[in-house]
Image (cartoon, rainbow, N blue to C red; front, side, top):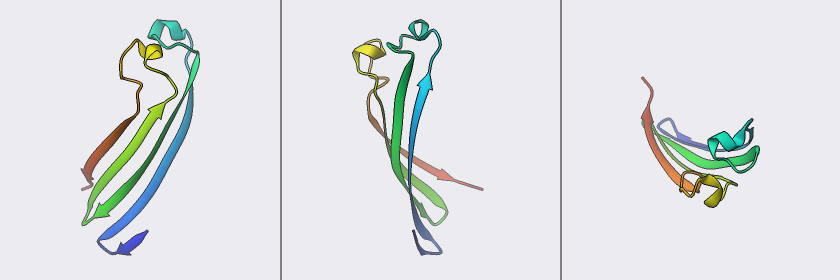
Length: 81
């Protein structure tokens, strides 16, 4: 969505499925899992400001009792030259 020459917005999303051979070696409870992400990027005067929500279907116990597989929000700022 373009507001004017200096401001625009993009919505994005992904859905993926990973197959992991020998998943026990990596501490993953199943040989496949799902991951997804949805986000918004605002381009303002050449800077990209992005916020995204990402998650997997691996629970806390299935991720070696760590929060590494838990849902999270990500914020990024970037500039292309």
